[in-house]
Length: 193
Length: 382
Ligand SMILES: NC(=O)c1ccc[n+]([C@@H]2O[C@H](COP(=O)([O-])OP(=O)(O)OC[C@H]3O[C@@H](n4cnc5c(N)ncnc54)[C@H](O)[C@@H]3O)[C@@H](O)[C@H]2O)c1
Ligand SMILES: [Zn+2]
Ligand SMILES: [Zn+2]
Image 1: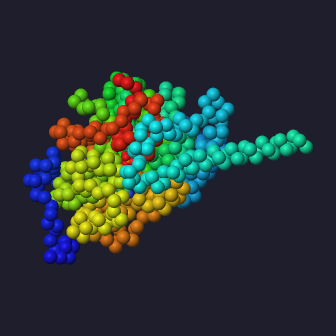
Image 2 (image 1 turned 180 degrees about the vertical axis):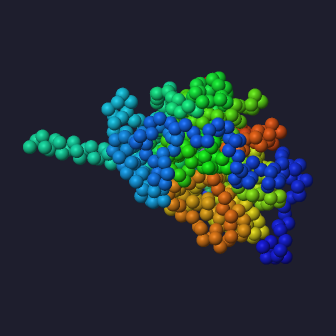
Image 3 (image 1 turned 60 degrees about the vertical axis):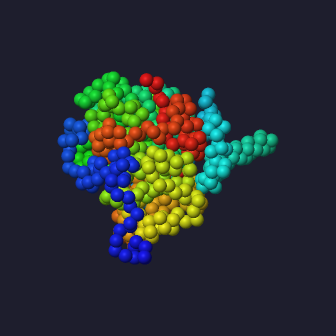
């Protein structure tokens, strides 16, 4: 007998609804595709959302808030978690000149992210709470949460790239230390002259 | 207040931060009791999401108690115990009016291609998240819902994203009675999607992962057949074999950007960030579904391009369906299913940690240590 796709009938090995209902609690309670919460995809019901406005009040602090140029206006409500500032802020603001369809927009944002992170690490050393790669990476969980037993003999495929993580995390630190050493040497050399 | 803050890729810590303020008349401030760490948080944690700023607080799955409400709030008062959908949404824009809450146009100035999400970078609006003692919740009359008395509070947290997303993912598959459904990813979302597929009448449910302990959960919690893709040279061929060479009717991608299984995709997608995430599971989904079948994608990808096998999708005549979950639309039905005992969300919770230990919690979840599946974060012991 040829296998399923070479003939018209559906696969034969699907259990009956009775068997499935007996084995699986709730089997088929949402059987009707038209009676599911996200069917149809769009249901026009502005009164059903709880909103008691046609257009929301506008939040304060709108001046200077960056926005996508694909927006016709600044949205009435927005997050204020970490306003743009410093060098990374300028980089990010520049990224917002490009539309969301442009790779430049996202790649410049990612650059801003890295500059933000390096800047924050550097600045943290002037505070009472410098960045601590041990506690902040949570790497001590390796000991407390059975790092070795969780991986060895488990045929996990993510082990083949997890070794890269310390490089992704530590690489910039090594580079920064090297940079600091070079700067220090230059200063010392200049002082000697 | 104490809050988890981002310090750069793979680095977070708990800091003292100013209390969130009412910034809009329909805001509420919620004192978080329990939050959770989601697979989506890993995209931020790994530095994959553009415009993730230092000092940003993550966390889009949380429940808590109303601490303060803005002057226009009508439906909530101080002291109410609420669950908050992960979507920040206005309830009145073009999209919200049509039920597309996750695609709200009024809350995210930073991008039009994605709606608002708590604690999910500035690319989704720049809202601080709920892995903190307190959080600002915009549109308090729209998103938050009072937790019913009968509901377990852990189930309530899981409803704010993971459960709603798994259930939504199964709906995106347009499953009909007797369908063979394959789910890539046995994380919280995949497990719930597999469980939900049965409710929609699937005839076979197959879950694929490489973490044996999660596949074990897929067998017990989700009654699924399982395949460990690390044991096969080519998991797609295996899916063809097990479906008598037809392919599955529906395949759900519950993996997303951190997908494993191909070194080049991993390195370019997640280490070098040259793609919007590694698209291995999505490509496996496209290749293991039958012609004319449906691929439902709830695994999340970043805004940059990913290397997707689009030619196969075209030539096979596939339907691709996907979205961020419009969470609150799923709730009434999911509440019923929980009450009827068809779903027991907190069966997959493996760890409950205090907010102070969140850095180790992220590492554990990211590196998949200690058989962890879902980790809850206790922000304020209630
Ligand atoms: N659409 C939405 O609204 C929404 C909501 C929540 C989560 N998500 C996304 O859903 C995805 C899953 O979330 P989660 O919390 O379950 O995360 P998770 O990290 O716990 O689970 C992902 C699982 O996929 C497995 N996996 C990796 N590569 C695989 C492959 N090639 N094939 C099969 N399995 C593979 C991993 O081992 C892991 O068990 C994430 O991408 C997350 O961002 C989307
Ligand atoms: Zn999530
Ligand atoms: Zn809206």
